Length: 96
Length: 321
Image 1 (cartoon, each protein chain N blue to C red):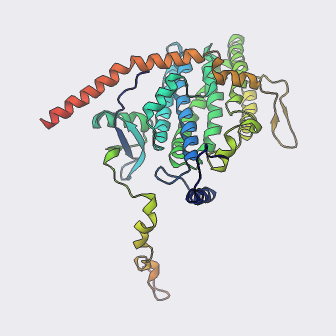
Image 2: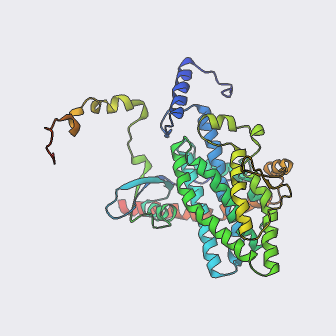
Image 3: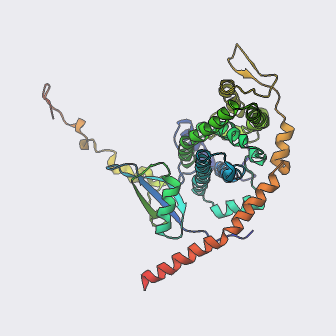
């Protein structure tokens, strides 16, 4: 059996409605951006699942790594003062 | 469980323990997370077989698109077969997150070294078979995939959520076909009954061998890929299908079928596992035909894939110039 050249991999992000964020739904292979968009529509939006699609070459995505999850997100661990519950409000005061 | 003869270092043992603790906490395993090689291999095997099944599953039904009895039926069947192609793509892409190429998986399918669901090696002899497939085969797949939607591997679970949503339409369109035929002339009723007779037992086999003989179940269950056993899922399917068959005046072809009052389960007759293994090993009614059709489709589509690539390269050069 002959193997084809494998088309590049793209990640697909779909916004479910007006005002909704684009969320990752999966990936697909396509020769270029235009075909990636068309394939994304046919593979991931056959039932009006979206009003907008982004396709991004998988190779263009830089991601944090699970091994670093501790140290990478560590700076946020001890900053309770970034949350409203950290601050005291006198009893009976509303709307603060 | 041996690790395929690989030596386990103490570090690996610690990692495996942490991995299994994550599974026990119900955490989702994601592509870049550390996982035992054996988990990766089992998932690649299971997911690629699942993807192949979606693709090969288009063949028995595609056979009837041009012969659908009405435009409404043709629209429904076309949409269903297109969904199956989409499902194959979701799962191939999910499998690729484990570090394999789809091209290699497809090569294995075409070379005949990969497995796919043995149900697709049975022929579709009449239009009623399209009804039986939607109702029973997709119905059984939904029972299995609803469980897999909670699998420990994130990309697999997410693909299953999407697939289950879509397959509810498959099941209903199949049931509607069966209900319509069953309520029609005596000849049409007989067609529906004949299809049920032929598809019932292979549908029960879809859940895989009995728990006691299922080689991979123990490991897949321990690692949270499977949450229910083959026999539990099979029982769930029988329980829900008996009433559906009665509602449309069809008889399940099993003289031993009876309600067990104590458990509330429908007890059923003995499954012919010799037939199951025969079909799995390549000697079903249509194994050769299915592979030949896939190979021909792949070869016939090669010029399209080449042309698309050439077109993209030409436009990329034009954009640079």
